Length: 346
Image (cartoon, rainbow, N blue to C red):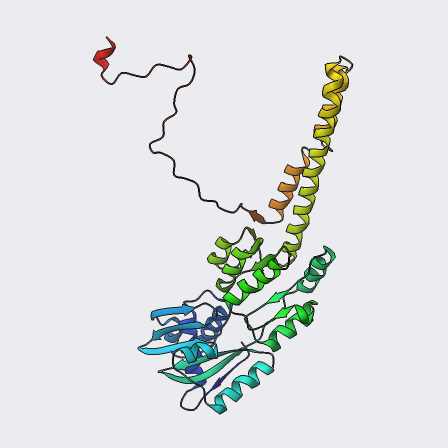
């Protein structure tokens, strides 16, 4: 957290304490940061009950914010648009403070208490070590990295410049439905889209993308919506997953080629009696040996597991099976059915 600016009639500690209490009920990374800052500040306070104050009537809006009642006081935190939806409007001076915080490269969260604008909590994103290298690695694979974020334009531009994403490929201030629309627009242009995300606001876009990739430290909703989950929080694992998938696909194609070639040549020759069984066995051994393609795919799957990747196919709806299910005897060797009454067998 960077700073807390309070409006007239409120105290900075009170604003952070109440905002941290209501944000503690959310899974969003920004909410976690505010809750952690409130808990850290309460450690040195005489009364730290506010950090663990219960929240009643909690509600959240994807891409908007959160709301709840803390200690009998209605608390709302989130975007300025979320406050306006709850009939709380910032005056000119308060809006100027909001614009100044955003232009300074901070993520600004507006807080309202008792139906009045109470302050602005500013946070700054820190670029994770290795993110720039991961973006370069994705570009080396022939991919086009795009940044979709709900943060303001100043924050998005700073992060994109730090990791090496082109300004034209930055979409800032995007709501969850806007992320889905961006994915659909890319797909309509003929692109195959892989979406990586970790938040509740990313879940719909993860489901819409051709390949949804969730970070292991993300929310349960994002993990459930994704096709692949990396067991960590490193963007380099996304590049590694794509590299492994390409190598696996190459192995599959190699297997198919040699399988068709072997059978197309070997079967006619064997039918004419011109193929020595020893030669056929040697060819099979070469095709199935340690260096052959047949065993390479499982080895790559083992490498994927070692890299911390969890892959699952997309779910498809299947008709319900009759229950209870019993196997039906087939063929003359099937055992006769047991009589309903043991006395009938006599």
